Length: 378
Image (cartoon, rainbow, N blue to C red; front, top):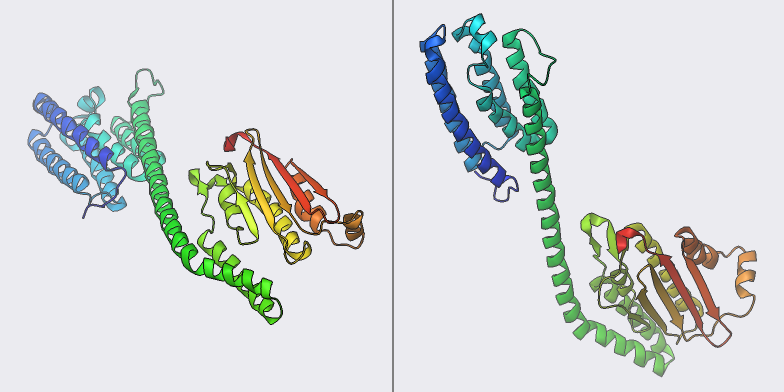
């Protein structure tokens, strides 16, 4: 049964067109040289095998059931056997003065099939095997490639066709991945809209009203807030890798931190950075948001702004909490609490960027995290 999604199928079909032309050439060659052979009747018998095998291969490759290693290897073996059979149908003098009996052009079909099935390495190996069979018949290998360019042609055919097949498979895999990603994002957006219109809004209302009422209700409000934030992260979990996983949308990562207490503002277009850089930047921003939740006060809100500045990307995290007293960070570092210096400043230094903190008691805090953009993200 033909594979339903074979990216190399057009190349297999084109190869069978070449096979037809090579069979026509082989027939003309057979008619022209048959009287010069030592055993002409045996040559015609072997030629009938050649034609029957050619038809079988054409059908197998066009239908698809022959596009597997076992069939291609069988084709290579049969081609080599027919080439070596020249020794039984022709004299040594004829072999020395002519190409191998089934013609090198027809034998190239094996090289093409191997290249389509196994890639450039397999194609070149099959081409070398075909030329080794021809050299075996003549009893020598000519080092003069100018006069014996067939070996170069065979290897070049195997390389070119193999690379074309390899490229087709890779492009097909990337296309399938893009289709799956688009479908996943569409489903995630649909789910996000449904959940946001229902459960998230109810949890946000319970959280807000519970904090306003206070007392025991505040504990329920905190639980509702935690569940709301968890649900937001679930429905907006970033699936932002593109271009084979080399680039990541920083905005999609930051969007997962949005909640009733965290407002995230993003550009209209994706902000792409190398995956490792994007995730380190997100981790630093996440640490700043965790500090807001832990230290800025129970009613503090955080505001995240992502800016694409062309040659750099900046994430600003601002809160309206209690701020940081002068000398507090230095004191925390002396006490061995290195969350800010390592998780935020250290990360940005490692990325070749910067982390600037603006704060004052009662005035909240603002982090400005900036990373340079390499060529891959532009």
